[in-house]
Image 1: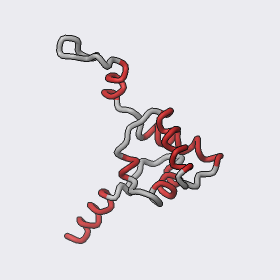
Image 2: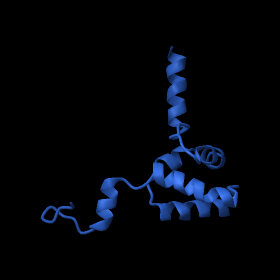
Image 3: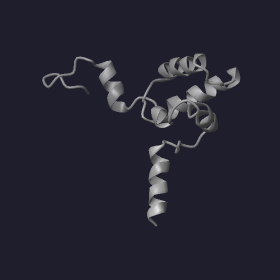
Image 4: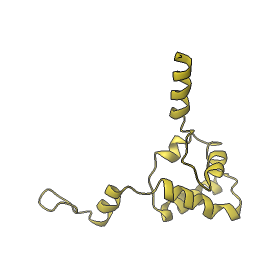
Length: 102
């Protein structure tokens, strides 16, 4: 029983659980070759930001075929896009107590 719980925690801690979708297998294969998947799953970025990140990773050695780049970017943006709060803050960077963000 303890071994099962430990294995489940280790599996989750390693970030091995990605949401289903087209692009998941590519992200699992290519990203975990250089770093833990938690590096990906803990990041929130817009599609444009993910495009930059994916291109940077390719220049560092990630072997993503040209035909799969857009699939990876779409997957990451859909599943790890900016949160509502961070999007609102980005639109209204001057939010204060007297001028709250909406």
